[in-house]
Image 1 (spheres, rainbow, N blue to C red):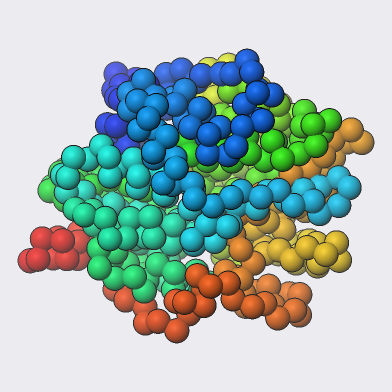
Image 2: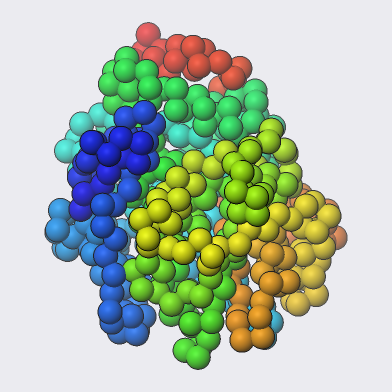
Length: 429
């Protein structure tokens, strides 16, 4: 599998190099030079999740890593299910929160960790990533205790739910966390700056585990196939997927699944008040506003990093942009959607509720909606209980860390301060 830097087409790398490197020159994203497709979709959908996922990922990387290695990686990474729950006659939820940190990013984080463990040959690596919520926990747990790999996670101070934060700030050992006195976009900008700093990038052997890493993106393709496999056969080609969108890796993965032959009819990019993409799809003007803090804080992103990959899918003729619609949902309608879901007998949290709201008002008579449940409601316990007036019990992963001490450092949104902190931390200076 060859990948090309979307900002510098002269840089082409293997999958292993792209995973280890994270970003290309000029902060360019890596993108497959070719996307494989399947003719035997029904046969593929009849397979069990792990076996099917091995086939899908082998189509990308089997020639480089070998199918047996891919099978081992998938088996060790995907140890939990992706479940489809019917909400009503027209709507289903793809529940992606049954992994160890109760969020969809467990799929990508664990797949990336297993890939790196096999391709790094014991060389030291520093994972540097920014999180608006779930990435931090997924990456921390995926890499916790792995030899020769240190993880540094930046997150916006005071802008992540306390229970989300506890999942990744309490581990210690090779997991180092830093609360930045700003928003997620500032954290992400500092990560990019570090990758442009040769001394830091090479001296600390930097790698990023954000959704910009191609390994995480490819892992996410697999659960779209799993979702369609669980739908009634007569509804598979009528499915409209509504994706709660922040950095847009999840939507990118869904579109790649469609390119590979999965019969998804169309997509909805569901955002909160940070509506750069919905406005762009309506007006053609890319005009990010300042990031707004919302109750769906994992989606508080105004400059989504993965959008260039979606543009590449369109520009290269893989996807017709007409199959994508954007919808922004404000705070009031987010809460209304949560209450509506509860009336349907389904308890949800703000991110999934936004996707539900977007799709429930946008289905034709012959369509069914699938909205993505990206996090367990208990990860947003305070918000969910306040909106619904219903007490939530904590699942075991959250109960285990709720009373543990957080171990994060605090820094201003200043790159030089971060650089000094990382060098002192990782080089013992």
